[in-house]
Image (cartoon, rainbow, N blue to C red):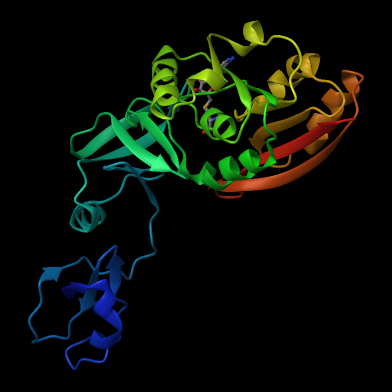
Length: 288
Ligand SMILES: C[S@@+](CC[C@H](N)C(=O)[O-])C[C@H]1O[C@@H](n2cnc3c(N)ncnc32)[C@H](O)[C@@H]1O
């Protein structure tokens, strides 16, 4: 598709020009809009035809990451033209309990990136550590639930995905993480965000590191229910748990509560779609 790059703020007036191909949609990227041009008129760029179904990818700093099937050369070219990224990677999957990404580099370089999301600075190497932008709304939601001085345990802290927004919202967070490389980024990210006095980091397994009673327990792991009976040893009436999982796990949670002689109310919500008929969910459990 032949397009002309124009300033986005001029798009409204330009769309009525005679050279515009009105059968195709303009493509807008920040301050630049790419307007489809009719045959025979001058153009500044050629973009791949955009008729195909839109394929999702993440922008993690200046690296583009694809999930799902391997993208073809046309899509890779489109992404290069559109974003001029430092590198493009394809996440083939994750391995082991630390969810270490199995990636294939597709273009340019990979390596450490620093970026801001909802006012928090994150640093990580997306080719070595997972990052899910689909959890953005959930991070905002839970951080709005926090009261100042609340004692929170983040049992699967990673590089601080939830730890950092929770601490920024006023919580005192005990962040536990098994993967030493994630812990290294977690420490850096605490300093980058000036939150080191509100975050206590334990490097190791949450099964050996939880201490005392918490007001809130964050369980950001797809197999969180495997760790729920342990978490229930660190609650009192009023403690809130955010139990992540795949699909509706409220039945399983109620069974574990009952087996542990605990009672609580469960509210289940979908965070994102992760495959055909497969959803990443979170169930808020308020202990009574
Ligand atoms: C799914 S990732 C983190 C996800 C993050 N909370 C999010 O939703 O984006 C899970 C993290 O838990 C860590 N992990 C896995 N098992 C653990 C355990 N038993 N104790 C502590 N951390 C663990 C992994 O290393 C990984 O960083």
